[in-house]
Image 1: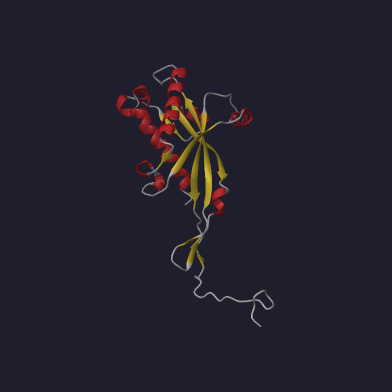
Image 2: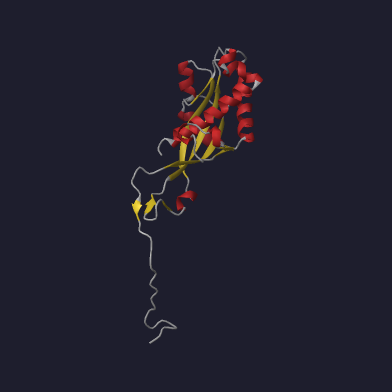
Length: 208
């Protein structure tokens, strides 16, 4: 389904939000019950700052088709229909702490606490499934694999140049696999009922 990209983002957002609110060092920033106003936003770093928000920018900056999974065999629904192949993609997120004047602690300290908690969360839980799933993934058997990726200097520079701002503390995660299903109807493909072997004339072992 085309909603699965959003579902992956909501799932990561929900997992991080739960972890931040359970952490004694971050709860005062992220837990409304303790007066926290910080959020985990899907906006760009600039978008968060423009809105005056404090917290973590979890920006989906790239989607890549997963070539390996494109070769999976088609699946039959009933015996005479074949489901069209879904489009498997890998989602790449840039995690950037955005600290404004209402963070309740100095900016460098808050940034490092947030990044440290993100690293710990997905190190402890690299596979997300079951009750942790959100959006259109909720109640499904989907499993999301979250992997920390090391960006080279050139790639990092291009990302921040695209944002038209100077570099700041951030990390990138790859999430696999977000599957986008086809909106088209399944293909009719009747099953083979009788196999008729044939022997070519003149072939070795052929009977005259």
